[in-house]
Image (cartoon, rainbow, N blue to C red):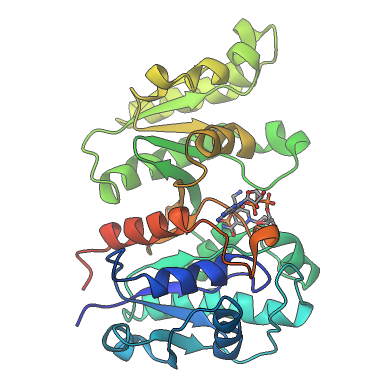
Length: 333
Ligand SMILES: NC(=O)C1=CN([C@@H]2O[C@H](COP(=O)(O)OP(=O)(O)OC[C@H]3O[C@@H](n4cnc5c(N)ncnc54)[C@H](O)[C@@H]3O)[C@@H](O)[C@H]2O)C=CC1
Ligand SMILES: NCC(=O)COP(=O)(O)O
């Protein structure tokens, strides 16, 4: 029997649970692979009823999930107080949200599930309950640590032939120049090159590296990071055999004929990487974490409280995230 994908429930006040339930209800039409949801079963039943979805939801293990999938949504039940309050995060649910991610990762590490698709968490709500990581990306890296060595997780936003990576992620913009070291850029390029080959089957990846400053610093007149930090890191990566090019002015890099000639773009900060992908493919982009021993994908959108509990959220990006995780793990039965 095929191993299921693991899906973590995400923020209960958001659209993640709605989309999981809506996708399950249309699993045949969308030819979805079997999956098991890590989350609170009472809450999921309540949200399904709110959405008017006539689906069965059963407690399951990874071992029987694929068999159950044809008749009911398999749920790895995580006990806790999870009120069904669309748009209103509840502190008590935070522990269940975090446990859902951790237990899903543990099931993959035990070889029971193939890969992880995460529904969006509300970062502000989780920080409020003591969650100590900026997001899934860093939490997953910590869960994947071996002998106390935490892998460098790399966030990639992927859509067809546009793939962007932010070097720095959820940090204040004013901290970016101090955080972008040549070592971090070099290490990130190594992870990108390795995973573009391993996870995306690209034989000879070509990576564009964006500059930080306008016009990539205009020869140092508009900032020196491009010359002093980014260029040496690219040189070092090229010496390792990585086909990295740059630093390129970020404004013209995202002119389609330019990015189409690269397999991925390394950008220096969150919005430099995410604005292009959300402009081109808000509905279908997928967030992939590179650098981990497990496969993790996620829709590129967040909790969209304004759509939660209404059945109006688009499921396109979530379906693309499931399809990509399925493709990336298809040899893992
Ligand atoms: N992977 C994750 O866990 C992610 C979590 N987030 C979190 O989500 C929360 C809200 O973030 P926002 O910046 O407001 O972004 P958002 O993506 O939740 O919403 C932005 C806009 O897009 C719309 N939208 C988003 N997803 C939609 C969908 N599936 N169907 C229809 N419309 C949709 C929303 O209604 C809103 O107008 C934040 O706490 C953020 O940290 C954001 C991105 C990814
Ligand atoms: N803006 C992207 C985002 O918030 C996703 O973060 P993560 O939870 O995947 O680390």
